[in-house]
Length: 445
Image (tube, rainbow, N blue to C red):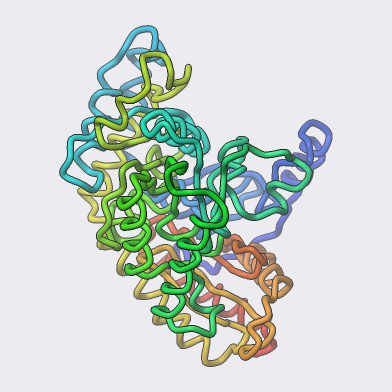
């Protein structure tokens, strides 16, 4: 409950219906929308729409709001910055917040080597520039990503992305010299985790013989936990083996932390769980608490490979984005949100593992910290994906005031990206409504 009142919603309400009609007339159909209404106010883990419906937000703007909607420190930092300047452009006249944030990320990211950081506006831009830097540093062209991976919608990042529909269909041709390796999916394998890891590493050895030699590969880019791919979590062994292969062949290891970073998994960066130090890290989403900003951090010698003017962008590292990000880091530290992410994950696992015993259509309950997912199947034995069931649950959840989203190659996974600032009461209410919705949709209630 919120304020002791059970959540009730009508979607879309009368005001939202009018806005939807205007949206259909003025905006192309390409941009998708999860909930069929419009925001009026956001605070913490709550969103209120234009018709007065209040939602518990379990989507967090696709992982952008680890510190919640309108966090006080961020809002104060933005107001203060507005009194000075909006955007002199770092490439024209520099400003201190850019330097302060670079220093902070150089300290926060894994690894003891000297690092450097620069800023852009979006996650896709960060990926594009990480690839440019890797190619410049190594003098090689090939880039390897992973099956089910998602890295953005610009042409290089889209070339590295795996899912065809809706992202790549009829948008080709794509960037050459990009390749894909298999990423472990233990739930969908008959092999043990060790056996599957060994088999996939063996495939890589064959790849270097049959597809392209390692001497032509500049970098491997890996999500420590796959986001759009369905919150699929690899073993520590697998990630360490990939890093070993990279080191053996002089290939750079890029950790894509755009969705996993800034506390989501219970550590500042998910790659820390695997005890691997990447050569380059890409960041965005929760870095700015909703203010567009992205970052590329890497070993100093690698980051210095491009010459002046070869990387950057007009809006990269805007002053508003920089001060917001500094306030985000402060909020995560002072409010102990890494510990909160761990607790959210434990409560999720306990609650929905018990629910799994009642609902056999829940194939797997998985999480790393507060990066949580439920995979729905038609049959527990065959593990046939059930996209329709997941869609039904999501729609009903929205009507009951909980915002959740799907994920996965088959669209059969419900992912939770709960703002880490959520209150215990809101978390309990959200879990209760989601549980009731799942039981209802599975025919158990």
